[in-house]
Image (cartoon, rainbow, N blue to C red; front, side, top):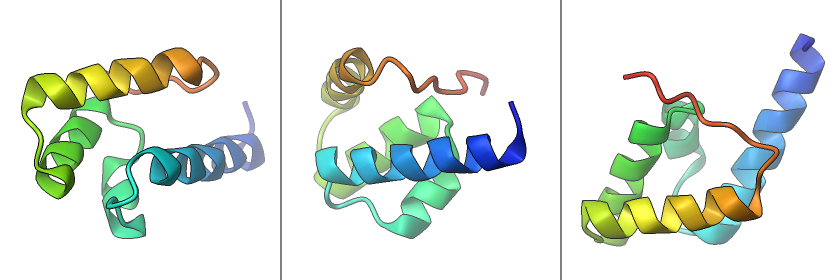
Length: 74
């Protein structure tokens, strides 16, 4: 996958994530940078939900956006 395609996919992800979790900022999404654990933490922080609720929301989002894959490494 070339760099242009990676950047395009990331921009598309950022737009979809902001639609789902409107309180996430561009800075939040830059920090997340495709890391699932980072996304869960930011959702908890910005939206005031528990870890299990954030996990439920992300799993639901992943099922609706199968073309995007998170980095699951810690």
